[in-house]
Image (cartoon, rainbow, N blue to C red):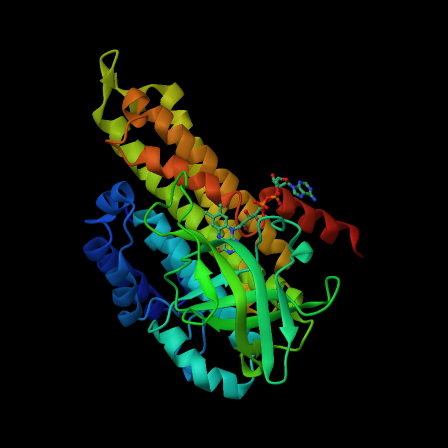
Length: 380
Ligand SMILES: Cc1cc2nc3c(=O)[nH]c(=O)nc-3n(C[C@H](O)[C@H](O)[C@H](O)COP(=O)(O)OP(=O)(O)OC[C@H]3O[C@@H](n4cnc5c(N)ncnc54)[C@H](O)[C@@H]3O)c2cc1C
């Protein structure tokens, strides 16, 4: 059942409708096949770009959609309800545009942003390393200064869209400590940059996650975003926005699982009546609906703070924590509602449950979200 959304403008309502139409036409018919065969749906991103759905929260001046973040997130939720892997990649692309938009010079923006926001070039975000995930400041990949740029050596891990994306937000060490990290915008065809084979993941099979290896890869100075040493600040600023994207993806997954569970519970009979009419199961569905609605309200509230120019870092962490834990519980309960059938690949709830798990892990695990929230409580 389509979610009855409270949207700020007629334009936003049209946008949601457009998203539903495009997603029903190009995502729903092929999602199962691609997730099973683990094949990348290349054309999907081109179509989403042409529909203007890859750059919604960015200013029109630079080729973006000029939409409030609360609208962008609800669009993302609609995509995630059809295909979480595509929604995650869209969210990561948006995350990858953030450093240039927020910390780039006008010259850099003029050069690269229109293609990035128009969807001609797709982006990836590469902060994590095999030994530096939650503790991002421990990263070791190094960018050594030369006359006209940097020579990069080291390896990055877990890159969503790795090997496929056209540009990579690289966070690499140019000095020591947490203030010795810088941000670069590295094109895929950079000499000395290669990608590992895709990780064999529990879910999100259609979009690859790979490592990247830099072997004396030259990156010119004009591709450094922000000042030298500003990298971690840039990375964390982007993640505040990105976490809201993951919260929206999680709500999309949870909504899809709820819809499937409700539909099944109205068809399936046991002990002479529909299973939804057994109060024990009806109440389970009610709790699932309450979790979905409250998770959505949490991310919309955080997005409105962002749209109003208010601090929202803590709210983004709360939204990510609440929404992704809700997605894990709701998708698991959806499998329960479908009984034995829920445990088979004949029904999508099995996939939703596998996909929900990653939302509790990437862009800061939920332990790290609690760390952010508890620190914000302690600071006066
Ligand atoms: C499918 C997938 C896609 C990803 N995409 C990207 C991407 O596009 N770009 C990117 O840069 N990264 C990406 N990541 C990496 C992801 O962000 C990291 O896996 C995540 O941040 C956790 O880091 P880690 O795996 O090294 O776990 P660790 O940091 O080793 O953590 C292990 C466990 O210890 C806990 N822990 C660690 N520190 C603390 C603490 N201080 N207090 C309490 N508990 C703690 C963690 O919560 C976790 O449970 C992706 C990962 C996956 C699996």
